[in-house]
Each structure stands twice: as C-alpha cells, then as structure tokens.
Image (cartoon, rainbow, N blue to C red; front, side, top):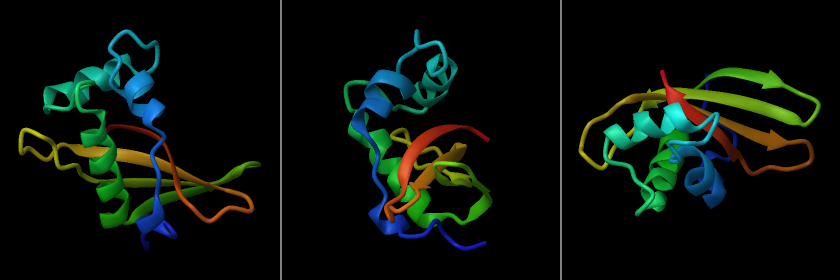
Length: 111
C-alpha cells in the first residue's frame, strides 16, 4: 500500500505527547509511556517523539485503512528512530477527517 495521503504535511497535537503518550499514570497512555521512555523519549523533550512520529508516517506505508463516520484512519507500521539510537517497531494511527486533507496523529504503540 502507499503512504498516508499528504504524509509530508502530517501534524501531531503536542498534547497527544505531553498529556497522553508520555504520561505513565494516564489510564490509556501509561503502558505506552513506559514503552517509549525505555527508548529515551521523555516529557523533558516531547518534540522528539512528535518528530519521530512525523518521520514514521512520512516513511512507512499504510498497512490498514478504516473508514469511519469522521473520516479515514490509517495504520502505519515500522521502526521508530529513538533518542537512544534503537529502532523499536511501532504502529502509528493517523486520521484524515472528512473534508480535510492533512493527516492528524491519533496514537502509537508497540507493534
């Protein structure tokens, strides 16, 4: 499959990182935070994870597309360049809402 449409324009809401994906006591993000922190990502530099995720969506092909009432959801799998130099395999999920053209980050987790 191809890349997410307009992957080069993808955006990550900073709150998705600093209030969810890197927060260990978040009810849903906690286990993800433990995973990402193991590879050197941290709340001290949340932009590192945001940048890595944007690179991820711009590099790897879509493995699954689901159309919802809000728009299309795209799943992307591949290695994520971590601050410690390792390349954990991650699945990232992006959406393009109906009537929009820019991919927006939803979540990411170990794959």
